[in-house]
Structure formats: C-alpha cells, structure tokens
Amino acid sequence: MKPFLPALSRSSDDASIYANRYVIAMTVTLACVLELLDTSIVNVAVPHMMGTLGATLDEITWVSIGYVVANVIVLPISGFLSNLFGRRNYFAFSIILFTLASFACGNAESLGSLVFWRIVQGLGGGGLIATAQSTLFEVFPAKEMSSAMAIFGIGIMFGPSLGPTVGGWLTESYSWPWIFYINLPLGVVALLLTLLFVPDSKHRKMPPSVDYMGLVLLAIGIGALQLMLERGERLDWFESAEVVGYAVASLIGLGLFTIRELEIDHPIVDLRVMADAQYSAGLAITFLLGAALFSTVFLFPVYAQTLMGFNAMQTGFIILPSAIAAGLVMPVMSKLIARGVPGRLLIIIGAGIFMYSMWRHHLFTTESGLDDFFWPLIMRGVGLGMIFMPLNNLTMANIAPAAIPNATGVYNLTRQLGGSVGIAVSATLLSQFDHTKHAALVDHIAHDNAAAESRLAAFKQMFMHSGIHERMAELKAYALVSLQVEKQSMMLSFSDLFLWFGITICATLPLLLVMRKQRMLAGSSDVAH
Image (tube, rainbow, N blue to C red; front, side, top):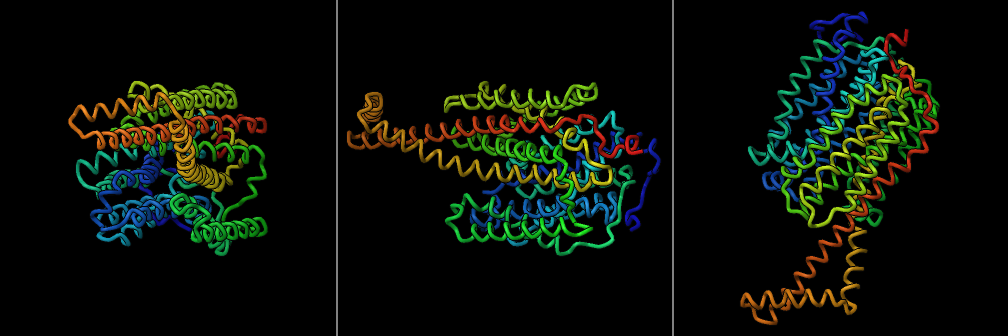
C-alpha cells in the first residue's frame, strides 16, 4: 500500500535516518506523552464533568473506561496495522484521529457524545506507543539503542504522573474541556514532525490476508477483561452478574483467540514470539512493573487527598519530582548499558531502591508532611527508571527486526494490563485492609483501653470547656475518636499496600536468570544487515 500522506522531507538511506534519529525520538515520545497523559488527566475533572453533563459518578466513569478499553484493544494489533498501512501512515493517522477526537471531546454536550469520542480517542492513542517503540528500534544504531529507550522511557514515566498536575491546573484555571483542548497544538506539532522525519519501516511485511475472526475474538477477550478490571471493585467483583459476564466473555474470547492465532499462518497477533524464554520473562516483569508504576500513581494521590487534605493540583506537584527523577536516571542507565554494565545488575539495584522507597512509604503516618514525602518519592522514580531501561534492552534482545512491531505491541499491552490489574487489586485490597484494621482497632479500644478512655475524657472536657452540654460533648468526643480510628485504619491499609508493591517487584528477580543476552539486536539497520 502506498503512503497516503506526502513525505515533506525524507530519505530512505541509513545515513539520513540516523541523522534525524533524535528528532524522531522526540517526535514519537511527544505523541506517547499525549496518549498516556489522557489516561489520568480526566480523573481530577470528574466532579466538574458530572455537574456540566448531569451524570452520576457511576455514569461518568465510562469516560475513562471507554478510553482505556479502546486503548488495550488496539495495542496488540498495532504491529499488524503498521505492516498493513505502513508505519509512517499508521502513526500519522493515529495522531490525526487522537487529535480530532480530543477536539470533539472538549465540545461534547452530552455524556453519550463524550464517551463515544473518548473511545475514538483511545483507538487513536492505542496505536502510538507500540509504533513509537518499534520506530526507535529501527532508526537508532545498536550502540545507541539504550539512548533511544531512555528518551522513550521518560515519556512513559512522565505521562501518567503529569496527568493529575496538568488536569488539576487546567480545570481550576479554565474549565474541564481544556484537558482535551491542550492536545490540539501538541498533536499538530507531533503530526508535522512525523510527516517531516518519521520513515517507513524497511522490514515491513504486507500481510496476505486479514484475520478478521482473530480481531473480533481479541476485541471481545481484551475488552471484557478490561471492563471486568474497571468495574469489578465498584460492583463487588464476582457478587455481580455483570462482572461474572465480563469474566466469562474474557475467558472464552482470549482462549479461542489464543488457539486461532497459534493455528493460522498469518495471525493478527503473532503469539509465537512468546516461545522465546527471555522475551516471556520480560513480559512477566513488565506486567508487575506496570502494576507498580500505575498503582503507586493511583494510591499516593488517594492517600494525599483523603488523609492529608491536599487538592489534586498540589498532589500532582508532590508526585512530579518522582517522574523527573525517573527521567534523569534513564540517560545515565543508557550510558551504563552502552559501556557494557550488565542489565540484570541494574535491574536488581533498581528493585532494591524501589523496595527501600516502598519501605519509607510504609512508614508514612497521618502526621507526615512534604519533607517526609520528598526523598521516598524521588527514590521511587530512580528505582523504576533503573528497571525500565535495562528491561527493554533484555526483553527485546532475541527479537528479529521484522517481528519488532508485533513484539512491542504485546509488550506494551502487557504493561498496560499490569497497570489495570494493579489499580483494580489495589482498590480492592485497600477496602478489605481498611475493614479488617478498622475492626481490630475498634476491638482494641472497646476492651478497657486506658489510653483510649483518657483521650475520650480529654475530648469531652475540651468540648465542655467550649460551652457544649455534657451529653452533647460526650457524643462529639465519641465522634472525634471514631474519626481518628477511621483515619488510622486507612493509614495502616495504605502502609501495608506500599510495602507489598516493593515485595512484589523484588519477587520477580529470579526471572532474570533466563534473561542472559545483553546485546540489542532489535531492528537497528547496522545489526540487521
């Protein structure tokens, strides 16, 4: 298929592509930041959208759900679509679709319209991340591949973390449609740079046929799985017939999809790439890395706003140094990898730093302040940044150039699903931990606890001294103690969850035993030739 978009300035030789490699890296990373920003930017504007559109909280959640479901359906087939239409065509079209849908979202006057255009926006955004990564694997020479992944990784880390900050500022300073309008100028810049510099792949293989049945099964399986994860905690999981339906549809859809893709000659997603043990081990680690990244971005704002009283924009600025730290450490990792430092060693050190950060998170209290947050969050960013870079290098080490688009699609889908699973599990465990710890604290106070009785008496006296009748003062004292118990049980729940994230990342380290190959062979032309 010939390009449907004109090449403004492009040469097919290696020297020309390599000369523009850093501009290409900035271009595709900008597009990825836009896509990831929109996964979290709407969360802080939910109350404003509810008021404008007359929607309930349950209804407005479909604005986020529609985007994420469309995203995860497109991610694994982005390699197929790149081969079908041409990588440059497909990437440019994805930017156009994402940008136009952003404008339509900002102009939406009803909930139905907003949800529809968010789905369209998700379809456009889903094609950006995997296509961007496969582009970088080809336009950078092998010796600079770690630098390319550092630039890409900065976008992956910054996008989710910037969402609450940018969304809070735009919503408070202007109005909620601006969380979508902000994409327009950046989308236009990304499109123009794509047309100027991003090349087509030299390893493109036109599929002889389109696996429509595989596409339908994938949409059913992945879509139902994502819906189950998004709705499960709100509907009390498998107590709900709706969630059970999603689970059954996902199991059947993905089961049939897997069988079909392994049997046909030209699958829409080539699952045979998972036969490589190093690649599969990388998928397992990146799944949990996605869970740690997205879940800590999800949990800390809930903690900061629920227990500490920060607003969304303040919370975003508190989190921002963590993303900056991750961005700064990635170029350092690229230099170390280029000089032959074992990637496995860097991942182990990064996991240790992340574990220590989560231990420091574990020690947070309801009295913690900005000084207590700063270094643990910085170390969180450093740890995740140290893991991300070498993991990309090791996971793709055995993948042939022609298989890179398909492999990166599955890889990024795995990280996205890890984030979805992590957030769903975090929300459920937070609720369960809170219930258990609240019951334990109440039981402790109820059984002749002298300290609790002393505090209750002190509160009662405080209210009486302010002129409140004795009986009312006693009721207020009980209410205040009850509020403190609720805050403390919630704090203990957050504390345990943070610690479990650190333990989970460290538990993946034995998988590094099968990830021995360090040198990157993923599509760089000098290696491929």
